[in-house]
Image (cartoon, rainbow, N blue to C red):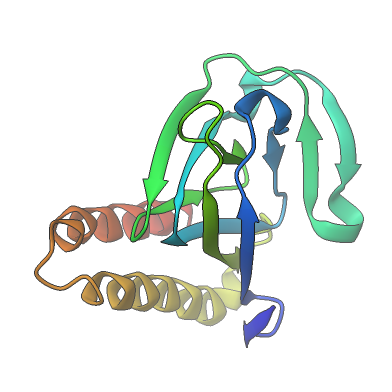
Length: 171
């Protein structure tokens, strides 16, 4: 865990082998936005809104800000490769670490940036929230710049603006 701004923004790096989709549990975070950045490998992630999941099967919100769910409905999937990223807000359930091709695990290295979003966005803390927005935009712009001149960079240019605008709408 690398601290950027106390418990407001931090980064964790993960390295693992992907697993079959049906073996991974859908999860959601209550207090943080997840920005998952692929550094190596290929992984499929499932995602849906919280209203499209069954009851919670395990609650670790107080100890590690994660809750797990059973079955999902209307679950979308996205496959991430080196250089791709996905952003999950607290109302979105996601199923990470899944094989992109059934029966073919992939070795993955991934950074997960956590940006606090706990629903307590009081007006007196706007300066702190603007710092988070600025960080989010700057961080994603930096990641995009690493792909300068590539197809990934062209794809990300629009995504960075889209996600930062989505973040601003929450204010």
